[in-house]
Image (tube, rainbow, N blue to C red; front, side):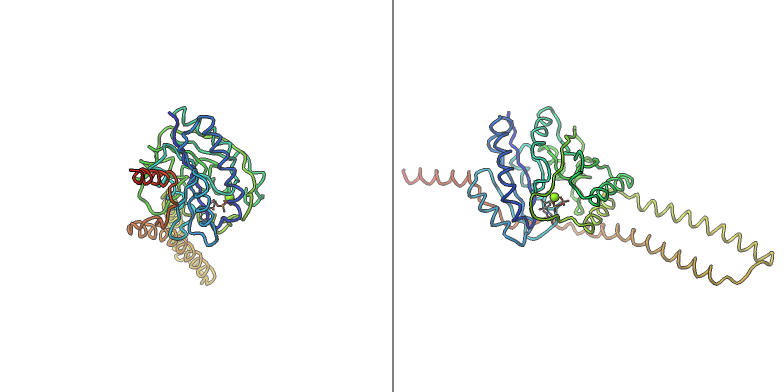
Length: 332
Ligand code: UDP
Ligand code: MG
């Protein structure tokens, strides 16, 4: 049986890149249908993450024009991860497999063939992994590498150099929908679901148009979110650090007492001020990290929806179907 594939594509202010990449996505999907790899009911599902430009209009038009294009619009910008989740949860109802991919054409579409093959060979999750990052700037490359290393070191189980280009089967998505957290970091969460998984390797190219929405500030935020939502290691590190400082101060007390009793004590203003300042700083950092977790707990307890869908493109097949029904009724 050929699986129904939904290719889920989050878009935020991408009016300049969609006209370039839509034909590529369509060609890839159509080719796989022709090859008999996937069912003809397979679709491209664009998720407009509350864009401020003409992205949604563009998606609507494409959905009208091409049967294989569908779209959903979120009620406001919720960020890449939530947009992707919204798309996956929409697709879950209709598809046997989903592939998530960015809309900017950076990820090699031909890797999809291999992903589907891996699924047909029994894998439920297939991670797309970037072979090399020649086309990224030195800065982007090294910061991204630092990002994966940091995540791993902090105890988050992520696949090295895998972003959000991946195939996931329906049963993984069904299991995943029980992960109710609000702070989501998908590439670190899918490995937690389990099932058989594998990786396919591809070259990453440059953005075909428009510009990146992930400047350093957002990358740092994503890294911080990734670490704090997947691991409590930073809190443990702080505890360890606190213990170390306490031990040192204990030694310091002994030394001070000895100096006092041997009559060597000199009023040391600078050392007092220095140590107070140092400890104050360390305490503030520790409080900040703990505060981050408390904040996360606060957000989780609210159980707010992670995304709200404002609109869907009309389903072409069903509307044709309805029209056919209408015509039949009229005939009768
Ligand atoms: N994106 C999104 N919501 C946002 C920011 C980005 O849906 O708030 C989408 C964007 O349209 C693209 C993908 O996420 O399809 C990845 O973004 P981008 O290409 O800017 O990131 P980079 O590849 O530079 O890391
Ligand atoms: Mg990109």
